[in-house]
Image (cartoon, rainbow, N blue to C red; front, side):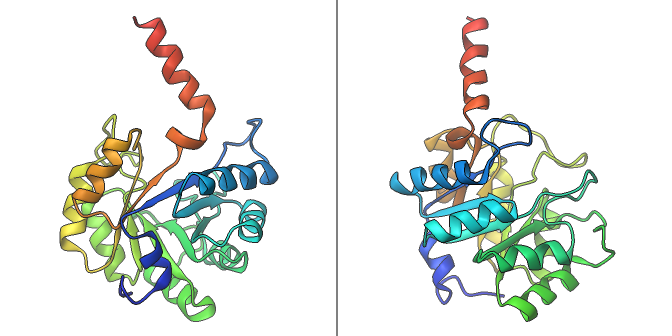
Amino acid sequence: MTSTTAHPVLAAIHGRLVVSCQAYPGEPMRDPDTMRRVAEAVAAGGAAGIRAQGLADLRRIRAALDLPLIGLWKDGDGDVFITPTLDHALAVAETGADIVALDGTRRPRPDGRTLAETVKAVHERTGRLVMADVSTYEEGVAAAEAGADVVGTTLAGYTPYSRAEPGPDLELVAALSRDLPVPVIAEGRIHTPEQAAEAVRLGAHAVVVGTAITHPTSITRWFVAALQDR
């Protein structure tokens, strides 16, 4: 377990905003240099950290910014695709990411390793922190017990068995923040500054916001839908 006060990366994002800079495959912005520019733009706006995916994106962002960097690698078409194997996790660490984010759900990992085995190997081989993306309270508890340094609510509502809500699962954020011995990062469907502030008030160590800041296609759809429904 990692002390929130002892590790400078976690201290640097405490109570602050981390911005997820990602684009989906096939989109015009799905380009490492574009994502680097997006990361620089949100840094200029005061982001305390960046979350990004893909080895090329991570390398570009690491070279451009000194902010804490949460890295992941989305790969494969199975249920577990966020940094799905130990090899993926090690590759993410090699980009210079400070925190390696990976799927922390109860679902089987493609390489057959347990979450605890993966976390231990990342710690031993790279010295990097590990963020476990979970979808339920039970998964959050299990991820902390498996040695994850940080637990994120990233996948709440995105697994078949978790509660899906239109906004962030603040109840889950509050429960995990109250009960876990490691920092909890609120992530997932946080669309307003008020929701972000509420997550921190409920105990979140930090807040990750992506779509509402860095995905113009989704933001445009929100406005289009509002005008169509008027």
